Image (cartoon, rainbow, N blue to C red; front, side, top):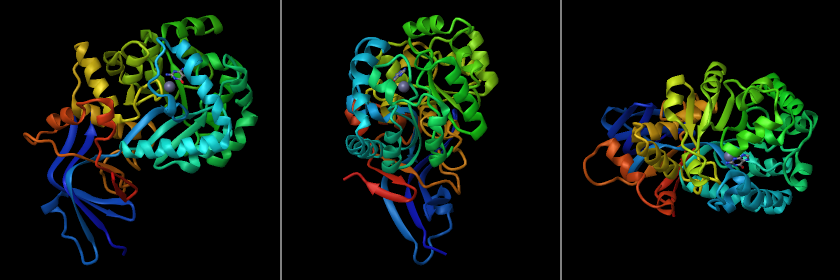
Length: 411
Ligand code: GUN
Ligand code: ZN
């Protein structure tokens, strides 16, 4: 049997929105990139000859999952222009047009994945530009466990991007087959970018081949008005996707801010997942996602950065904005829930809970080392401490990240 590495540190192991195991002097035994055991250091069987003991000064948490991020917007993150539509036109679409150049895209992908790993993100659900080749470039550069799709947008966008987009599922099929459902997500960018027959064809393809679907839903009031005008036959925005067969347990819907009660009931009935993007919603002044409604309807959700509308790819920053926003509205939220929503809940949204999201045996050894805060050893206090500070501080807070057993301290 190959040798194991035992990491000794304080360990937080999220179990649910209100449950987290804490090992003040904990240990994680890792063999061949997988977790073999987790617990109190004294309770774990002692290291065998040949095993390596790594003593880490800090607190281990599971690696972060970001279930809604646009890797092709990383270079222009945090450039605001008031509302979603002018922001897309002024900053985002001109930038995405550049990703038709594979050399440019490859260099940008290396930077993106280096930055996300350094900030502690080990997995995610990711939008690319409409160029299928940019997806291949991203998959080749990916560090961690990523599901990626080319933004399908044959309408309602600059000509260059419309031309780069697939127009039929026949055009999508080669890339989807090449990468398979574990790597490739069907990505109709949002309703305005796709005619109803194409949405329906994408829905049928996703169902037939077991692909995840990612799209945007109900982000800005102007967007909602335009969707109502473009799809007069649909009852509401959610119904546009529902009619197309795009809603199910493998559908991850970004934003969901301005939904009517009927729409929440549909999302719950279909088992859809919501990607909650608090920092993005704040930056584009899109409104607060009504956490009370998500909870009321029992819709599963996870946190996401939505870079580049979200100004930072650091999930610690997303957690900070999540806590601040809902607390300001008088909605109770905890650091324990924020950590769960940035880790295990993300793995659950991506159908990866058996492979990652926390420290249960047999999962991938993906984790982040955070500095040990001073004061009382209390997880809620630590989470408050880790999520305090500027965006830049939060991006550089992790002391190291371990991906599938490969430990890298931040140099
Ligand atoms: N709606 C359609 N495209 C986008 C995008 O790139 N970002 C956000 N936040 N919303 C969108
Ligand atoms: Zn988005």
